[in-house]
Length: 529
Image (cartoon, rainbow, N blue to C red; front, side, top):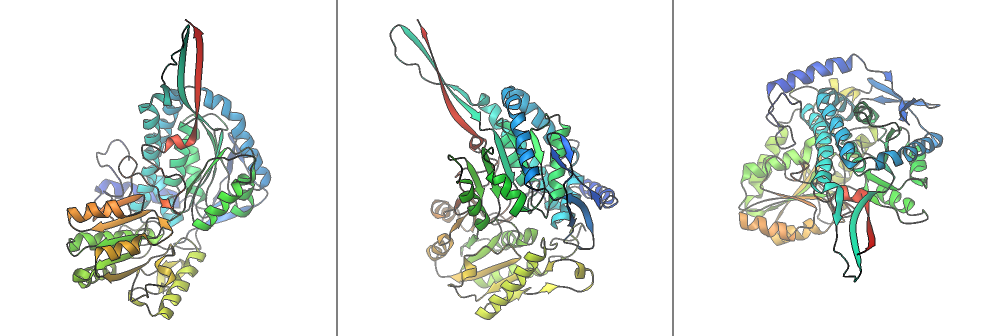
């Protein structure tokens, strides 16, 4: 957030912002709306680049709104972007880590200065409510800073090792972490600032040069990020930004042998396809994957009812359930089942749905027509399986909803426990709830999935410790009303998954993430004594 305010915006604090935040967001929204429909270029080697064809970026709030016109890059643009990054690598990796960090901190400061523009664009482009949109941008800046902090705290990862016991010689040994080279970042629609800026910041702080390929639903936000890196003074070619279809441009980037590493955030199926495709190179190259989740919350009979209900609703329906960390299944001990259910339904029915740039709105639209169709297909499937809808279960088409992709937040009970949707990530505003006899039964269900991203628990302190010891997930929360399974923040709750949710076992915004973008070299120098 801008430095003049003492309020620190995170996903945990966003529920009670100062009035100034709303005023400044609305001013920025007015300016952004006055400039819709403009053409935006790619950025390759420091130069603006147009492609042979373009595509329109339309808002899911109202598909009549053309937010901007973007370039439909092709294989030649992919090759040029990678070549530009390769050419810029020697100078960027060769400068001191202190110089790199100074420039990246300037870029993070620029994100802060432009945060209201970012927020307005994200709200229009993704469909996030204003607080989620602003937090997305704030997280991007903090992720960049955290990567810089880790490089600085470890003195550039240059560490002196032991000395060999050699008679007549002096041995000096150093462990040095060095960048790989050209890093490809394929980012998702749902966190277009944080999940572009975070990997970008880590890769750049480590000394790599990068090519950013955003989701086609959210090219504008990533362009704003690329502008911040450029305007901070990063040399030409260090950051390259290309737009276009994943099946052509994206695949050409992945297949290029001059890409030394890749970070992808998205669905399990697409990510595993990238993993297998990237493995076809002449040697193993690092692949950092964050591949979604099917995140449980467990509620003990000893839980605080209000805290549990608030956390479940916020995590189930924040960003319309389009978070890999969304709370999509809930297991509740029988003695408190009806109380939790009643309060969750009551809170869900109070959620305002509509244009997410409006201050009162919590739920906006899902991101595109495919997600809209997915929601309807899941509703049909649940209905046919005997599931019962306590809220939602329908799309919204009346009045202002007619031009967008609006889906009612949906709470499902009585879905058979062997139904596939207990284990499949849906990425829409649907969550399933059931009662259990014991916490052990709930834990069995919670861990019996191919994912292991986030998980939440509500109960006593002893039970919470039991939960932490037994749950198989990378980000875990206990007794958190701000979100049962969502709300990670760099330096507080680093974000990453186990099993099918992630490939590295290290969490972004944490102590061990930036090292993934470097490989180790041992340097031994022998001198006669």
